[in-house]
Amino acid sequence: MLIKKEFEKTELNNPILFVGLPGIANMARITIDFIIEKLEAKKIREYYSKTFPALVIIGEDSRVALPKISVYHKKIKNTDYLFLIGDVQPSDEYNYDLCEEILDEFKPSKIITIGGIGTSERLKNPKIHVAHNHESFEKKLEKYDLLFDGNEVVSLIIGAAGLMIGLGELKGIKGFSLLIETIGTTNYFGIKESEIILKFLNEYFNFGLDLSVLKKEITRYEKEYKKRSKLEDDIQEYLLKHGSELDPRYIG
Image 1: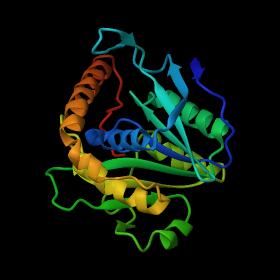
Image 2: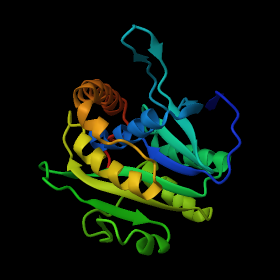
Image 3: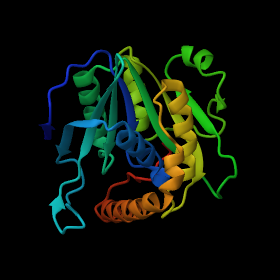
Image 4: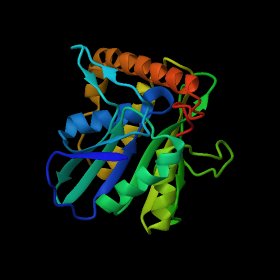
């Protein structure tokens, strides 16, 4: 069962879709949250499903909320951008269905997903590895400090970050995934890594973001994502107790 809540009808013209669902170091979520906030993107859709964990999230005001996945929209000049974020990853059996639902509904012209590659220690200069579904990206991205090293470091992208790119190829939608090296431990949130991803996205898509704000607001972001990290730890503990093999701290 999928419940969709529509906030406003939006005419889209070949939108570009960015995906930042929970994963290692909260890094993808931090990145997309920052872009949504600074671009003042508007929420256009929420998704709820019985395949999400059977729980509610308690807010600071003691109000409860079901876990959800949301889509935000921003039009810059003549380009439509969509940003997908969420409280959870869909369960294994439904991940395909939800990803396909989103691709079929919004019909993006391009897909960019964000994720992490877990390391045992914090790296001074973490690198971005790229996986894609079309060879044209290697030429387009060659001037940036990105690694196209095949499966030397990582051979799987688990969750929506991978499925969106894979399903996109079947549907003729070009896309790539940005996977940055980050610590694969609990209670770490990759603000530094997010900044590296943001610098690339800001230049490549010409968003015009003031990234110095991220450094200025580091205390606020740390406080916010400590709470989110605890929430994801609680969700992971629930999933493990109830027999799910899906670890939210996936590669990607």
